[in-house]
Length: 274
Image 1 (spheres, rainbow, N blue to C red):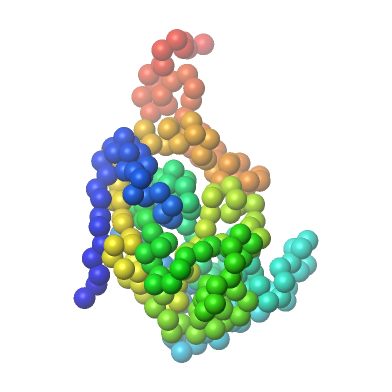
Image 2: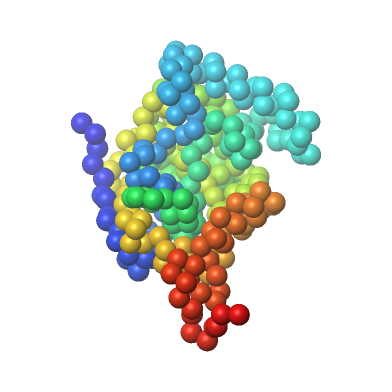
């Protein structure tokens, strides 16, 4: 039987903002998805299952694409990771659109709200994970800031990705970032959820009290929420530094104007038409 987890129905921006900023969600990790029916699955999991790759081949095929990327990407990377740092290699692959088992999360609930709502049309979702509750062991994130503990299985420890994650045998989830973070991770306050198996969604791999789903009524929430997030300077231009992010940000600019509401043509107080 599938585990049950808490679902909170959200029907206003005020409720969403109030809920996400509760003390209970302090230091949780968040993920916004534009469709509430989607499970939390990595791009690698989705690709392997949707394209009917035999499960017995998953380990070798995942190893193969990592090896191909590592052998060829030096042509484009000014400073490639150390060969043994599998976690940083995976984060760079993820950054550039390769299918990996890493699942993007953020420490910022407002960034998660943006990703949930930007392109949503019906019911969106923000998933929240509680790092201390998803693992029986002690929780830490990066090698640089904390001492590695005996018996630690996080992929930030050399050899642990190959030992504990690649075989697809351990139904676990860990949250953390590589030692060296790229520009996008920094801009998004990003982190990763890393599952130990690829055939189950993350919400089925963690205890039910360590995951909460916020189901958002997009029709009632999106307009006010997107305007509020825009005023917080949360947009594709800031979350994806560079020309591509700037270009992506122009879609929402079609809905926004300082002088009037483009949806209704109603002028804001103090403004007038030219």
